[in-house]
Length: 376
Ligand code: ADP
Ligand code: MG
Image (tube, rainbow, N blue to C red; front, top):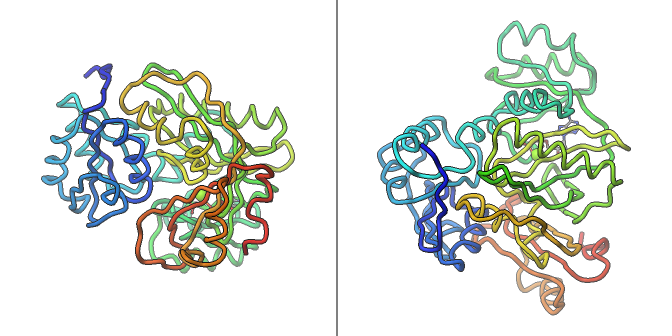
C-alpha cells in the first residue's frame, strides 16, 4: 500500500492513548480543522477535555479497536506500552486499507522493549551503555560475572519514570536482586557516571525530510523529569553528535513521526539511553517557543504536510508540575500567573497523586536559567 496521500483539515485523526500527550496533540490538531478521536480504557480523559472524541475500550478488545480504526484516516500514538495484540491488529488493518499509521507499529515495538531499543542503537552505531540480557536462567547465572559495577537491573518492558529498576553496587547485590526476580525478561546495564542528561526532539517525514529542535538539557528529580532548559548549553561538537545520533536512529528503524531521544553526557562522551516514539515531556518547551511545537510536527508528519526547513526558537525553560506541586490558588501560582513570561499548561487531571504529571510551566522571558530557582 503506498502512503503518499496528504490529509487536509477535515480529516479524522486517531490517537492510541488519551492522556496529556493526546490532549496536547488535540490542542494542535483541532484548531487546525482536524477531528481527533482517542482510544483508551479511560473515560473523561485529558484528551476528551479539549474536544477529542473518546473510544473507551480495553486495548486488547480487537473488535472495538477495529471499529475505531474504521472511523479514522490516520493513527498515531501517545505512549509505547501498547499490547502486542493491539499493535498487530493495527498492522493487519493498515495492510488492508489506506489508513496512515505514523510511527509504524514496528517502531513502537522497538521502543517498548529495552533490549530491542538498545540493540537498534548498536546497529545504528549509536554509542550506548553496555547491556546484558536476563531472559533465561543461564543468563541469570552468568551475567553477574560479565558486568562492570555499579550496574542497574531494569525490567525489559513496561518501565517508566525509573520504575522497575534496582541499582546494584556489587556482584553480591546483583546476585541477590536477580534471585528476587519474580519473572525473567530483564536487562542489566552498566552504570554511567554522567554529568548531564540531554534530549533531542526529532521528526522524520514520509519523504525522508527531517526537522528537529536543538538539544535540551534535562534535570530529573527522583527519576522524574523536573526541568528542561532549551537549548541546552552544549559544546558545538556534542550538539552536532546528539542530532546525528537522532538522525541515525530514525534512518536505522525507518521512523516516520516525532520522537524524543535521551542521552547521558560526561565531558565530550555521549551515550544514548532511550527513545520514546512520540512527543516527549522534554519537548514541551516548544509550545511557547514562538514557533512550531512538537505536537505541530506530530500533526505534520502524520498528515504528510510539508516539513519545515528550520524551526527558529527562543530560549525557554520548562518545569513539570507533579501531584505534590499542584497548588492552584497558592501565592506562588498567583504571583507567577501575573508574570507574562510564564505559560501554564494543565492536563485536566483531578486527582493529584504524588509523582503524577499534572501539568507544566513554560518560561519564555529573560534569564531562563534562573526562572524556577527557589521553587522547592
Ligand atoms: P525510564 O524508562 O524509567 O525513564 P531510564 O532508563 O530512562 O528509565 O532510567 C531513568 C533514569 O535513571 C535516567 O534518566 C537516569 O537518570 C538513570 N539511569 C538509568 N540508566 C542509567 C545508567 N545506565 N547509568 C546511569 N544512570 C542511569
Ligand atoms: Mg527515561
